[in-house]
Amino acid sequence: MQSVSRSGEQSVSRSGEQGVPERDAECVPEQGTECFPEGVQSGSKPEGSTERYTRWINTLTQQQLVTQVFTSHGPTVIMPTWFCSRKWFDYVGKFDEGGKGVPEDLLFFYENLRKGGSVFRVDHCLLLYRYHSEAATHAVLKETIWKNRVAFLEERVLNSWPSFTIWNAGKQGRRLYRSLSATNQKKVVSFCDVDQSKITKGFYTYEESKDKPKPKIPIFHFTDANPPFIICVKLDLTGGGFEGNLNSLMLKEGLDYYHFS
Image (cartoon, rainbow, N blue to C red; front, side):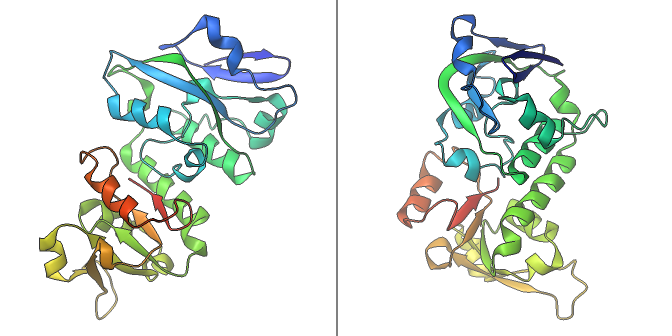
């Protein structure tokens, strides 16, 4: 890992990522900026290798840079483009160098938010990311990422909500429910879905529960469910069908729902 600095600002980069030299100066935050991190748009090589991810990371609004920090995509600005002051970097606490399999980027990003940092992006494509099967990111177990994401979602959102609905009565929604603390499980008032077979079934039974009787969570059509929602449906996979359903409810992201998948 390399670090380069200018006037007290710090960026972090790794081999395999390539900057665009003629635009590098645009990445540098204004003198005295401490709010972290600032990032840039990016592309991938081979072209199309991370198509959905690249589209997501480059089109998030300023608000979504903060509201969509819980998804499986990870940090909402790509790590090799982060810029912040040295003072802020030291305040957040540096990276967890615990060894292979530690998601140090994600943990640092979360800690930045915990300590009051914000997220910004320069809207130019200044990074070419080389995707390959030997990348270090593949050494991090998906289960490790999942546990950290769930814990952060509970800390930042669910612990302060009195009740909520999980949008997806399928595998991902049920997995989230099972992963929650007992306290937050009790706050789940329903699942919602568009799959008529799941809706007709009427409820999800938490068979692994030690409670008697075992918890049964009702399943509704999304138009009959009550917000706020934790959405466990992946974006950009249904030809706009899911996004259209969500938009039809005229809800506010970050208030009425958060994306988790």
